[in-house]
Structure formats: C-alpha cells, structure tokens
Image 1 (spheres, protein in one colour):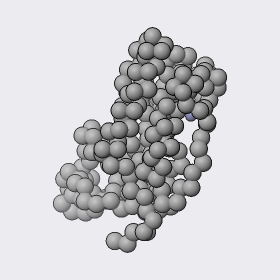
Image 2: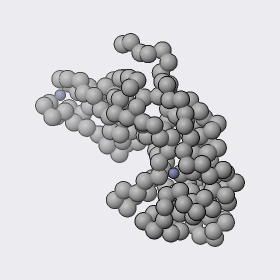
Image 3: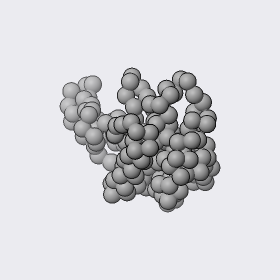
Image 4: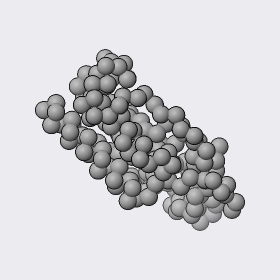
Length: 183
Ligand SMILES: [Zn+2]
Ligand SMILES: [Zn+2]
C-alpha cells in the first residue's frame, strides 16, 4: 500500500502517558487552588481534524480528547498549551456550567492564569501530513470480507469497550492494518 511520505504518525503510547500525567497535574493544581475536587476524567486520543484538543460533555459523560497527530507534530507546544487549555474548559464547566459562560471568556482565562499559561484561544499550525477528519480508516476482517472502521470505532476496540460483528457471517471483526490517508 502506498503511503504519502510526509504522513504524520500518531504519538506513541509512552508520550500518551506523559500527556495523561500532565492532564492529571493540572487537575490536581485546580483541585488545590479552588479547594474542590476535579475528578480524573477519561482522556482519549481519538480526535482528528484541525483541532488539537477538545473538552466534551456527551450524555453526562465528560471527556478530554486530544489529536494524536497534531501532538506528534508539535509535541512541546501542545504539551504546554493544549493540555491546560482543555483542562481549563473542564474546570469552568464544574465551577460555572458550560451553558452559563462563554467558552474562552474571563472565567476560562482566569483558570489559565492560575495555571500560569498564556490564554490563547487556538494556535494555528501547519497541518501538512496530519490526517483530516474522516480520513483515518482502519481495515478489519471477519471470515468473509474486509471492513473499513473509523478511528472512533477503532479506538473503542483498542480500549476494550466495543467490538463489531460482520452483518453477513456474524464473525468478529479483527484489526488488520491502518488505512491512513492524507486529506
Ligand atoms: Zn477552547
Ligand atoms: Zn463476514
């Protein structure tokens, strides 16, 4: 399979662990400063597209998502800025409720200030080699055919919270290989 030679690889598991640790560090810092508990929430590396990070509440579940490709290309910047940026969204959600404030308003800025990080809304990066949304696909196979799964489904399989069955033979889909493309 041909691959563009400038394709960015997602960050390694050991770098993901550093990102998770740093996320915890800011949660602990907020817990100490605001004197209330900010629980550890799931940290996923399943974000694609142009955003480096995202804080999301869906069906009552809070998660922080990072883009493993943008982190790979600009690790230091994202380690130092994107992590506190997303944690600050979570902190303001707990303190005020997301519906009551502007996303990058003064509440969010004051958390960033408390973290000692400049409050920039977004960074603009050259994203050459970073797969854009919906382009990341993973080949899976059952006993009778191949399937292309999205990164969201692939991540669920990796984390052991999802598995997929063939609609024809009923066999379990097993990961074969990445089908990376650059959009
Ligand atoms: Zn933001
Ligand atoms: Zn099948």
